[in-house]
Length: 350
Image (tube, rainbow, N blue to C red; front, side, top):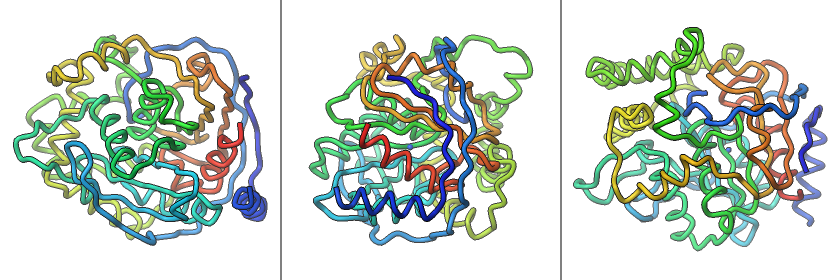
């Protein structure tokens, strides 16, 4: 079932919805497929309440990493894993985490590799940013936390990672919320030229392909991140404190290496690791996603993205799409937490 919705969300309605639930996730890779099937009306949404902290910050060894993550909600509640993008971090979900926890969910919000307090267990491990490696990090985290199945939700890199887990390991994904839809890609797709105006939107990807770009990002990573925030969310009036909370996570010693490898790998300008070749071959085929899915888009997303009609056919299970109005940009979970939380709760009951 495919359905496109227009919804107006008030805080009162959200709290009522959350209470009922308690009683009972571009700046990313160019999508590979574009087969228009639907449209995307607008929904208005209340702004963020400005939650700035998490109830609990923890560390756990999982796979190749020692992963830093926030956790909230009852330990026996249905699990939700929230995945951030670049150049963002777990604070994109500060509001959403508190609200989902209040609705009875166990919420896990990890720093991706190269961000915050997440670190590699070995200095000899290749600092790999390719898409399959990040997806396996999520599987390893769920294994370490003894979470067999979770709702996965994210945006940007996090949406792609959630898409991949849903596509390749559907038995681990109860349902999916993906901002900007189907983001699974391949090196071959990354080689295809776009019209000049479209290529202009990917300027940073070409910058990162150079030694100067790597050095520039390393030297000016906070200035760079703020510029991306402004371009990707042109109507979001974030303050310095909001930006600084997230910018601190970009000081991770592996951050630059992971980001540069991620973008160079996409253009086939950097090698991946052979142990991921089989997974990447499956992803290059554009696997369908069968789990219940909600895709979201902000009406003021300044990052490269497709119209939702371009990827609807990739979701063959129960499916809803919502466009969130009111000037919402790329960092949708932080800019419109009510809409994001409602999507998680709603997809849980599809």
